Amino acid sequence: MPLQDTLGRPLKNLRLSVTDRCNLRCLYCMPEEHYTWLPREDILSFREIGDLVDVFCDLGVDKVRITGGEPLVRRDLPVLIADLARKPRIRDLALTTNGVLLADAAVELKRAGLGRVTVSLDTLRPERFLALCRQDELPRVLLGIEALARAGFARTRIDSVLLQGTNDDEILDLLDFGQQAGAEVRFIEYMDVGGATRWSPDAVLARAEVLRRIEQARGPATPLEAEPGEESAPARRFRLADGTVFGVIASTTTPFCATCDRSRLTADGTWYLCLYARQGIDLKTPLRQNASRAELARAISAGWEARADHGAEERLELRERAPPHARPALEGDPRLEMHTRGG
Image (tube, rainbow, N blue to C red):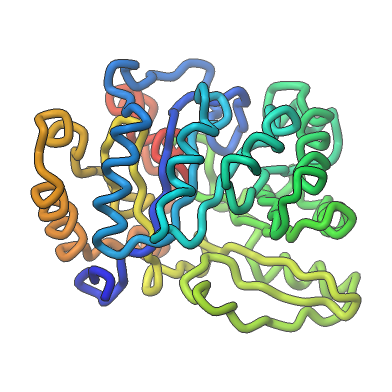
């Protein structure tokens, strides 16, 4: 039986950040001009990552998602993926990427044993992509999505963060693109997390409004039951009459803390029990001091069994909801950043 926290939530799903670096500067995630980076000597080696993943698997983790930053900027990433793919207790090995480097990497990732890929794509308009991401890389992202099908990937997903008044006029275009690309689109509410220093409630497009706009144009959206093993997934999924399936992740307006089984390990070995948590648990230090597997398991077990985090619900209860961290705090602790602990 998986390890459970104080609310009965199991330890099942590990988000594994392999780098805090990114080759885009998306306005909802990295809006500032300059950032403080994790010291390179603190970054876990692939062997260290594998050792920690083994301990997490001992305790019930069976889903691992590789994140960043942008994970494909980590050199020799397929080597790590091949190692993780050989671990029999991992039933779902996935990767989230912005797609910029994906076209050249897709075949090798598939050969290494990666199960599925999620690509972040918030707009189909080149000029808007440049404004949102501050790099003119839309053509490479689209080529990357095309490369996934050729490499043999199925169950591809496209994550689109919707910002009111910025890209919310592309909902239907993104749906159509996903259907043509053989990918399921998931619309994500703009979250006040990490370094979202420009977040404001007025920029959030709520799930109810997303559904209203889709149904107004395409007819009823029928809610789907969660697939086996996906009951804790963050997206509510819907099907349109033409067969199009999409999801909406409403972390901001309708938190799903009660079923959240996710935790996050940063590239420097700090373990966060909630995306909104201010403090993490240092696993790198005991690992590098040659702690035994049993000692690491006890540290992880103690952390999870004491877990009572429900950060999104706490944010929802705030009367005056503003960005969670000021710039000086983020500069003092880069682990607070969304791009460091992985979405």
